[in-house]
Length: 195
Image (tube, rainbow, N blue to C red):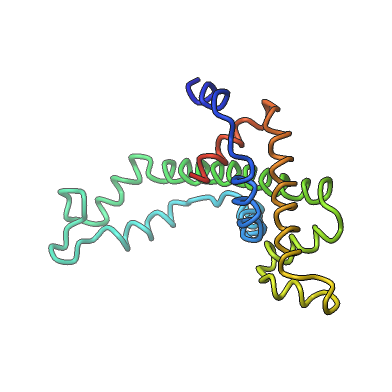
């Protein structure tokens, strides 16, 4: 409840958040592909055999030949005790929880990308989109952006002005969608991530 009050009382710094999104846009695209691969693979099933292998390899303290975190010095006996106490089920719950967190992260990341891409399509002209992509997706310098066009048609100052327009387009889009309750959770997450 306090977060909702805070969000209502303090308006976000949209240009700063827009610049943050723009600068991280290229990396966000890569991260989205990685998360998609993990999600598409699904939740692996942790089996009893995997548990035995894992517990056998990590549970011995080589100085004392005793199983760590237990007074039982017989490794197979300790493994059997852990298995009887639901170790496999706990690991499967952990894997499902981790996947749920990955899905949440994917949703938030997709939203951030959508914000930038919607601003690009709806609020930027063709030249602005091209400059934005070169600067923020490909990581080109002003000089490299200028060289991509006919000699003398684009200068550093113009690239700087276009960059400012692009950031303002993303900021305007962020400001517009911030009024929708459905996006309030993501806006709050974005503000926290920036801080």
